[in-house]
Length: 455
Image (cartoon, rainbow, N blue to C red):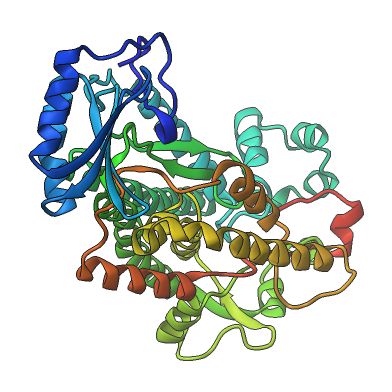
């Protein structure tokens, strides 16, 4: 254990900070003797402080059983075993570290970030109300000062200065606040359930992780960058890593799908002209429309609720804030299921394929580049291929630089059982159903290109 309380590792798990010392001869003998209980040993090699012991041979029992017998005996002398299979031989290595022994302090940062995220998502949720025709900051500023003209000057909004009747009535403002609250509960309920799925499954397998860590971003469309948990030690084997990885998407979908269906029942089907007809006339050429992307699953759920394939021409669902949160839940799940690196989908695919998963890295990057390029060309009005999104460039960057490989496990020999393999295939199918090549598009009227957005 390092001085700063973090878990060090060796080799693929990272080099431990600080000076390492070789284990005593008695410790080495204890680890060799423990290895002989699970392996027909062919040779033993001692090394340096970072990798003090390598034992090769053939396991005499199932790899998961062997690892479970080795681990407490290695930990008793300050080490952790790893299992590999290389060139037809089983290999036990000793890492000079014991994982998961530190005690976490009070989760102050976790709580602070959650509170900030609630505020951030609530603020963005105000924009999702169809009863608010000007920005919520302007409404609050007018309520605090009572000076419509002064607020209009500060925000540079001549339309508000000329049309103070655009301010919401007390009843409309109350509806806006209620909508924002529902949006917070729906979106953070989905994201929180997703992360708690990971956390509780990790606890079940006794793998040390952080609590869910929410990330605020007080900007549309969501108001948050989501939430993450960090594993503070490698998973024992691919089965455990698979369980932890898959628990988040499954838990999130259990909440997201009912939330989306409920939100669609609160939504209405209109053309854009019908929507604009209900807006104040002065704003009709200033209104920007956003179009959420359609996955196969989202299309099916809209058909379930409305009995028709939407969009149909200019006719589509103008979704309630709760529905938007549900749609965002499906999108976040799909993004997490991208089959690469340390994303949930990467864990699933690594569980199914082992180290062969690295061969899929470049095809996935290539697909994202195609989608990002198509979206960029469309936004630059060079050519519209009907698919793609420039936001995929961010994911190309993340995959290329930050998600380069799957998270390592201690026992790489133990693979998935038949039930987990079937579940992994089901999750890949779910990814295809949820994936949205063009998640979000904006239709910006000409008046807003040179003017000031008022909504």
